[in-house]
Image (cartoon, rainbow, N blue to C red; front, side):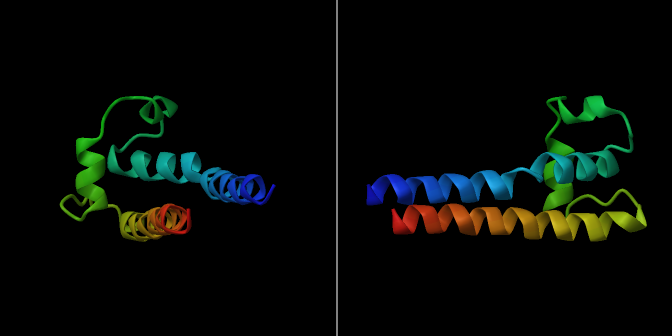
Amino acid sequence: MKDLLYENIWLILFVLWGLPLTYYRSKFRKIVYHTDHWLINIQPKFIRELKALFGFYHPGDPDFIKQRNFYRFYLLIYLLLFTAYLYFK
């Protein structure tokens, strides 16, 4: 019973933290690829997005730095959550 509760808590944490990921990623990709079209969310383009995430690309938008730093923080918390799951498993 304890293991089932333990696994469910991690699942709930991952789902709750992951729900806004699609919104934040969409917003970030729209800035990087200079578009407002929804199709950017399903297109298999990753190179420019990864370069922008790690600081090797700057599209010149003043909102870009703010959004990039927030997205980095969001993904860092996701990574820490996953690491904690693996460590405490």
